[in-house]
Length: 292
Length: 338
Image (tube, rainbow over all chains, first blue to last red; front, side, top):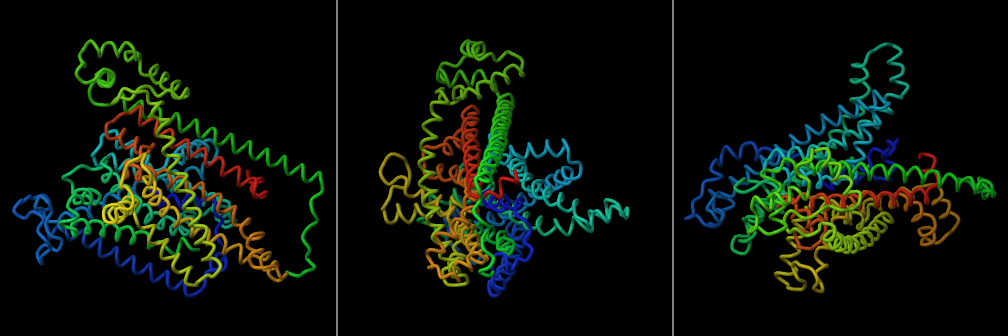
């Protein structure tokens, strides 16, 4: 949601900084500290991905109710205890993490592929194709992402595909705008002109000129976009228009455990901590990009 | 930079009028572009909502009848009455045309749930949202500006590092969790302010703070970067060398230049604000557009959803237009780019 908009409202219009160190007056120590942040975020994410991949295999029973285990405090076998229906909290957490990461990856891939393809198309064909796509993207720019996702939620609320489509549809515009703007300048550069004169063909231009220019930006946007998707999904189910119980989803885990925050604070804390770690891991990956 | 390189002489009169022309021309282009955007959004949202209504499960006539006359009085005859009244038997394209014309007249029909006029309710929601958004925006701009200025003055210093940590923290903190924590601490544990609702004194405190914290972090960073960039520039060095006092340099040379970046950033902030409003209003039961939107989505009250989405989108368009115009007025260089 908002996280992405912040970067991409600026990104397409910003001239590429010639020398990052002098432009924002960034001193040496700050740079080192930031790459350290990046490494830490990558490590954090690796742990979470591992949890999402292996967790559901270790703790299989995420839906099984056992009311005799009502709000049991944490133990060695159940590090986060059992919830109000006696379900294992850590099993539900593992499944929720897997769901969040998986769906976010799917959304970002879809939006990324669509946005990059359309951006390249617009920059390549120019003319009415470009104008049409630009006009459509203007409409999307006036609609904050959450609104688009909400409209889709109204179509068939509680179903995964509406959330997937909504988030993907809200995000393609960013890739489109950035790829279009950057490709236009790449196509106009003397290097590409030379390549064309040498008849090196579109594949060469794509591989040697476009990819190096676009790849770092796209990777940054993807990690941001995943954070946005994770946040949007948990927010939607938190306000009651996203996925429905008994799905194990981070926002739902928080909502469901809230009534018991006094008796079982660990149950509320666990999903909140996982969500925060997930978001800071995804956002931390791009810290360097922000400050250039 | 040497003293010899004097600034260019003040523009003579003809040049001045030419520049004014460039402003009007650029402003005209901005207005045309934004008007097209507004019309595009209205059409897109209206058509989408129409398609959703066409595909809602069940007979829409019964839903409308339930909204109008209450669930007890829904039967085939009231549904037929509604059908004739709303012209539900007309071909789809005619109905869609009617929807679009109505939307342009700001008539969004009646709510499918309460049966009240959507437009009347919209006015109430809009006031509440603008109230909340204004307080949050003022808080965040004041806080962010202060932090950013302090951080930029002493880069790498304690304030800068603290701001940095604050910004990173706030970015990874979803508004609904922040709101939750604020409710638990300040209204449940300490009992200082009411947790949720509207109309009592102090109701606005928590939602406004929740919104403002999320916005202030980013604003602080943008301020810091913009001010730092200006501080590095030649003309600021010159002003310092000339012997101007620190605060004079800041007021005359730095803030105005950094202002261009900051003003255009407000355009980005309004998007964040609109999304924040949806979440925060639902969390704190603040009866604004966002709260109404979530309700409409939950109950599939499509006319209400159409109206609230359009209102929020048009707020974005209007603010963006104002920002565009302000930037044109502040920075003559942008006029040629138009």
